[in-house]
Amino acid sequence: MMYFTYILLCIKEKRLYTGYTNDLRNRFKEHTEGKVFSTKNRRPLKLIYYEACLNKEDAMRREKTLKSGRGKTYLKKRLKRFLQCSGFGPNTGTP
Image (cartoon, rainbow, N blue to C red; front, side, top):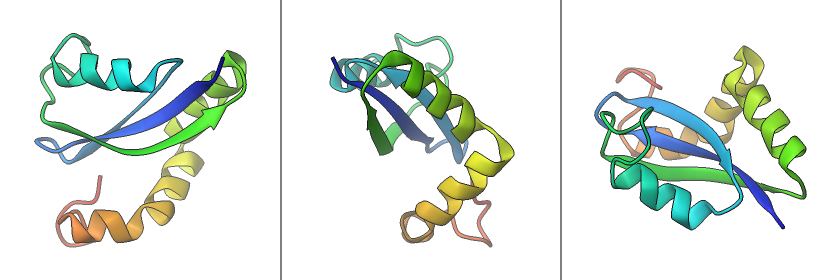
């Protein structure tokens, strides 16, 4: 079974949300339908990044890393072009 670490863009708040799951399609659907407590008031949401992991422990570890200061720096560099094209560049409050 594969696990996924994923990043959602909370468009209303211009913030990123990081999570992990073993069923990415279903989990994103739960987020967009307001069934996830931590994102139900942050909609609309957009899935902007994900990584596949071979086991749950790796996905959980990656989620923790991406939530850290170093992980956030990595994501901003990795997603720089997308964020700028989406209006979340340096002068518009990068998430």
